[in-house]
Length: 372
Image 1: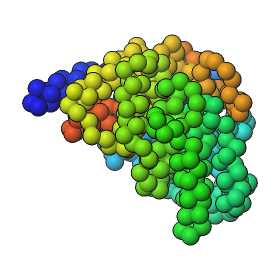
Image 2: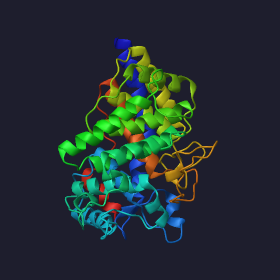
Image 3: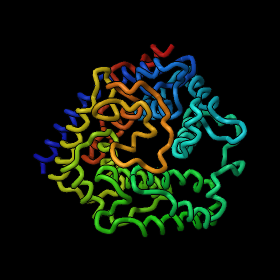
Image 4: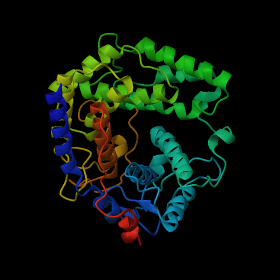
């Protein structure tokens, strides 16, 4: 037992070396003109491209996870708050980026709504205009439980990752409902999810093992939003171990999603399995560290349009959205990967029953000095 704990600590200590320059990289993504954060270094090279909602919200989450939100200067806080409030559409209450293609991607729209409302709250402000829940501007499928059921059953799951992302994002429209009505919708969803779950693997949808694990991870966000346990967790755990043993983690999400799922389903993990999980995660994470101190979303590069990065090589997904380009797609750090890497670090410590050490080499008071 003691030897196992010591080995876990050694692996976690090795993991710390991967994060030596992450906060310096994060500083370089800030844009004082808008109050937002860029997705990657090359994002500044795209003509007319301003920081996007997801990257800015992810940066805020990283600052919070690093203990830096509580000491954020008021000028920075006000600037970031202005960023999110300026992205809200007065007519609908939704939050949009500049690229019109973003408005056509239902997943991006739902995520931007969730990210922005949470960010505004963390920054101590309020949205500029009433939110969609306050003006009944939810998607058409929310008209009734029956129309919601038809929509659920119409979502294509040939790519589990993308399909389950669409299913899971609907929770942002269910949560504001009054309890009796919300219960009708959630009952419809959970009944459907259990009906289509693979009984042998505990996973959902189709695709490669990591694609199916990633789709299952997306559905966990729906279950978590309503504090519901996921069914067939023992079989899900066996599938996670199979994926870690036999699949190549070519995407940061393939590293984060299994670890995050483990944290949610909380299976009994043996000492030997814990060491294997930590060692595999460390090895996979190290392959995505870049020279600029950040992490890339994919092995070959940082995807230029992360909204379609779920759809890998192979048969095209029928409901594939238009790409929303955020960078030039170089082998560089990107915000999507960086926020996941920092979360992976925290989750690995949680699995080992330890607390992650501070990432801050600078004094708290001096971190924001370069944020002009």
